[in-house]
Length: 153
Image (cartoon, rainbow, N blue to C red):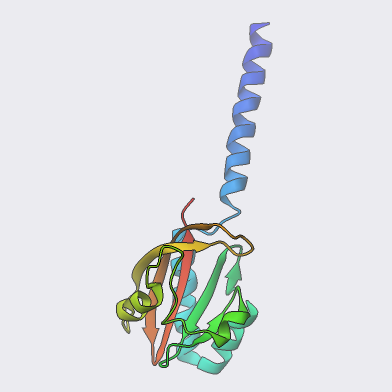
């Protein structure tokens, strides 16, 4: 009887560990977001037009679960958005979260060539309505401000 309880307990713990690790894999990690931005920087430096097209299409590994690249040009308008191309007609610079935080202005003010910095704000995951805390890595590549963010769990 004790042996059966022990086996059932171990099986339950294994299942709980497996299900939580599967759940965690549904979302991108901070490390994956930063690595994606680093790849985006390299792509932008090699061929800006091709890179922006790949970001918009989510091609070449530039969209993974809830991770995607977005960029804005010197006029503040989105030039790429891997999760919502409808935003390409919107000003990134004027974007605010639901709490009224001027996240676009902060992204533009924070982004610097050759550096990766962080901006925090509330934003819905792709396909969701309710905002979630998001940390976005931002940088500047030429005249483009590019970013990749991850959602805190």
